[in-house]
Length: 206
Image (cartoon, rainbow, N blue to C red; front, side, top):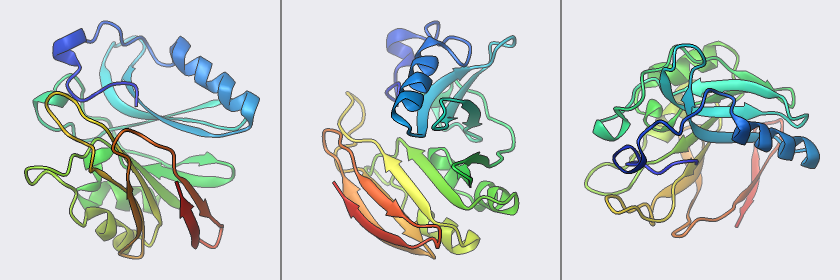
């Protein structure tokens, strides 16, 4: 993630440059040089219009910037800086049709169903979802996988901000209505998930 949750009151939005900016091109070069695909949460400024979105960018192993998914339902004052994105579509990475549910876009079934209907084979959900004061995701990730039949990888925040504590926030792997794995990263961390084309998860390790 490029930002925290409550960044606007501290640093405003003028720093958000038209997408893709120099930072995204740097990430694309890293992806190319290392032969990896990247999915990156960022604040996106639309060229020309200047409109701002809470987005996830997809970059393939060749360093090509494939596009973004924009959050369809910004939540509360902390996301008032961003506009609602339009309909999502899968992006093909390594021959796999990938769909993204940006954080609380997983709360309702329509976005996941739309992506599944367009041929998505797996769902990714980057999230800023603190497990406090009744704000946690509950079983929504499992519900979306049960409805769509698609596996979902959820990468949630770790650490703390002055207003929010993500130190016990869960990242997860869900499939067929079940949470197969979950893990927390109190101060940030890296987790590896092996997934085969038969949509069976083999192992997760920190």
